[in-house]
Length: 62
Image 1 (tube, rainbow, N blue to C red):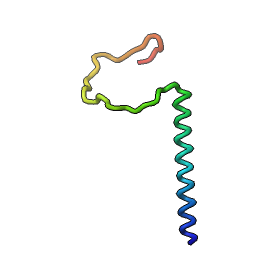
Image 2: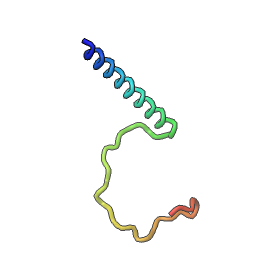
Image 3: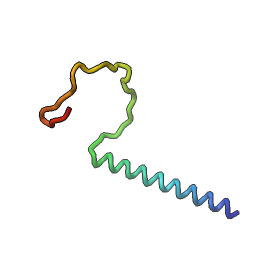
Image 4: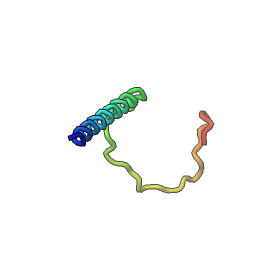
C-alpha cells in the first residue's frame, strides 16, 4: 500500500513539474516575442560551401 501511495505522489509531482516547465516555456516565448506555432518542415538538404565568410560591418561579426 505504501508503494502505491509513493508511486501516486511521484506521478503527481512529475506531472506538476512538467506543467510548470511547460508554463515557463510559454512565458519565455512570449517575453522573447516568438510567435506560437510548430515547424512543419525544414530544408536541410541543400547545404553547400559558402564562397566567402558572412560578415556584418554593422555588428562587427563574422
